[in-house]
Amino acid sequence: MASGIDWPPRGTRAGGVRDPAVVARFRRWTIRRRPVDGQSPSAQDAEARSSDAVQTRVEALAGPLLEGMGIQLVDVEYRYEGRWVLRLLIDRPEGVTLDDCAATSRAVSGVLDEQDPIPNEYSLEVSSPGLFRPLRTPRHFRQAVGKVAKLTLGPETMPERKSRQMRGTIESADEQGLILNADGERLALRYPEVKRAKLDPDL
Image (tube, rainbow, N blue to C red; front, side, top):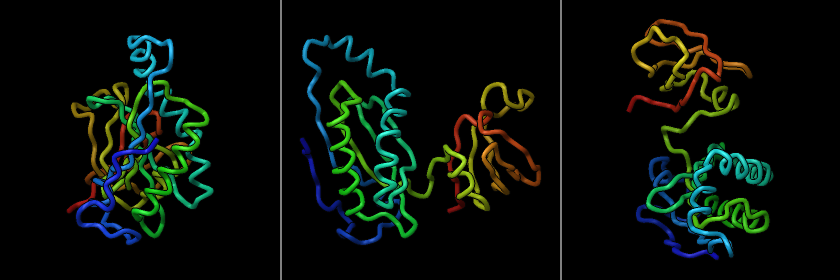
């Protein structure tokens, strides 16, 4: 059941293309779920802590659904912030509108209610990725070619480097990895070597 709708947020206009920073802060559609009957709070918490599994299941359900609506599912995040939050980041070539967020919320809520992949109470939030969008898949990296990104390397990648973070321009990307130009140093990285990545434009 949907609740807590604030329509539209301050500084926005329903149906209009949003400024990325404004859209990224738009998180208003909320779904509340009841605990599963017969399941203790400790058992619910233990299952909820498996956030990676939840994210994978939600991505598998929501990704194809949104693709059929012309919307790209950029990222899925499931974490505890005083309450459990399922956060979806979406994008479209022409930009994201409030109507896109509302349509995504309705469509994804329906499939989650039907498939029931999350046993505990949670809030569903939908927004655009904003300027500092995460890069998780080969497709994301290919779309980011020519742009500046910040990468966090895995612990076993280039252990001689003191800093795990790198910033540079993505020169190329394919299904296996990318080439990053960091201050003139060209580095070939495989995706498993990158722990986290996001766009990091000069503002």
